[in-house]
Image 1 (spheres, one colour):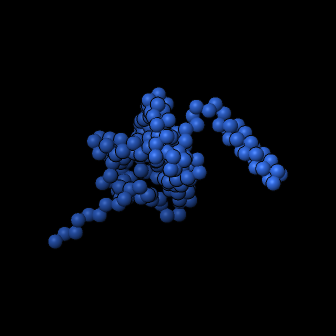
Image 2 (tube, helix red, strand yellow; image 1 turned 90 degrees about the vertical axis):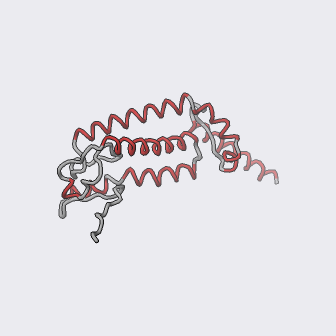
Image 3 (tube, one colour; image 1 turned 45 degrees about the vertical axis):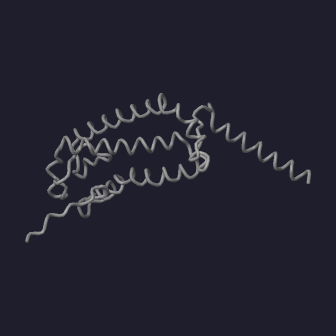
Length: 181
């Protein structure tokens, strides 16, 4: 009985030529979007609880889902270097991270992926800021919003100044209470 061929999880399946310092650096750099997405959004939600950030993350997940649908529908092949990289069994476009130097994508795939990303990002930005923002007050007042302190500051013109003024006012209020005791 023949063993079926193995398939790699391609999220972090990045290879480079042994001894190629630039290739090694670029292999790690290509994973930056993964690290930023995971740590950045988790940290942002824990400390800020902003609806804009939450919907930005949801947009990235939707974009990834759309990319997978397109990838499995279009079946665009990877460059000839896929044999060396053992990635010929996966599609080359679209990709959320492009690596021409390492041989995972062609220049045309990178430009097409960039155009798709800009289009999807612009559409999602429009949807959030023209349609979904109407739901922000409802989400804020929901049980979820109240339990997790979810907030919307998109209506505040200068959030940095607003938070600064509120923090100073609270410090002054607490200082006056402690002086009166």
